[in-house]
Length: 209
Length: 209
DNA sequence: ACCTGAACACCGTTCAAGT
DNA sequence: ACCTGAACACCGTTCAAGT
Image 1 (cartoon, protein in one colour):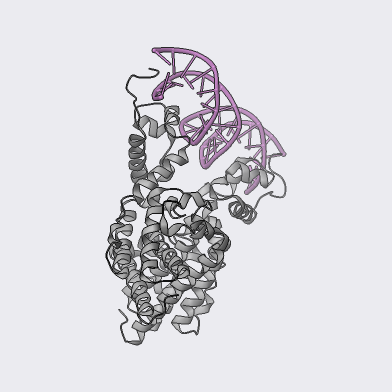
Image 2 (image 1 turned 90 degrees about the vertical axis):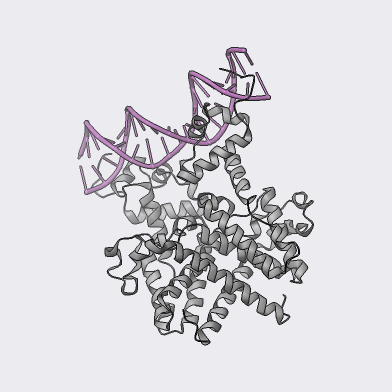
């Protein structure tokens, strides 16, 4: 074939295919050759558009983070902004759990990650939190959100009754898988509620650092 | 060489070498051939002791979780137990951050993981929390602990001032790397404190489900 | 039982050759 | 500029051969 008059690939097509592959089969299943085959080209062709596989994965992470709603902070009380943003971020990651390990390490150089950090930190600073505390709160929210998206707590327990025979309190742990949605969502909702109400209490008492 | 009269390898030696390699160079740097070379044998020899590479990684995760102190619950108030256990777990993961993605998905079939779940859940049940709430609290603690261990929040921001030029509130984010210890530890300590004090408030008000 | 070399089907990436 | 085939140095894993 050599060079076609109309390019066969674009960065966007590559990112979309990679994202779908990661969603469907996991990060480990993404290979340059498999991705290329999916796109109807040979493996090395991808290097005309991205320098490395890591760059492709990074672009997928960027496209996922870009789906988070950060407009919720504008004009809102910091508590409401934080709560709505956290729910939006959580929902996006729940839809794309396999990419979470990549973005859990921070924004890096990704524009969407930096824009999100700017929005969260800015809202906290504008509300009157000290710089150090605003940073802590931002970190804390990331811990809860990525920690919960990294893997279902409920599905972390094998649905095998025999496994729990020797653990008296876990004798019903094999039933967790059947209710994993309620368990995982309930735990996240509880965590978000506890964190925001207790932060709110401190704030109202004037403790903002 | 063929079979030596005294076996060259043991499961324990393999796990120790794999753990050191993961700590020093990361999960991705662990390969069967490199691990074998480190142990003075050829790659395939490892398959006489473990069926797959995943089993070796799992054994490393087990050995890390086994270092967490779960005796803190015996005879203690549930609040104190939870706080001490969380600190112990956090300290262990901070010492071995590269294995966190493996154990963040739950206990699986690892005895140390199951024993830890038993201790945490048992302490909450014995304190009077409902089964559903005890599960939520256990999940929540895992979210915070693994989420914070998965990667430094502060180091997730590149120490490159130019990167933040267009983000008004992030103009000092490049300084985070210099204080990453205070930032990460401060955020975890704040999160633990907020969660436990607000849970304690609910508990004292009789809201245990 | 336990270690070995050879082999299989994969990887990410480079590069000269084609249009 | 952009796609290709061939090649490099790796992977995890299998297996027959050795003691």
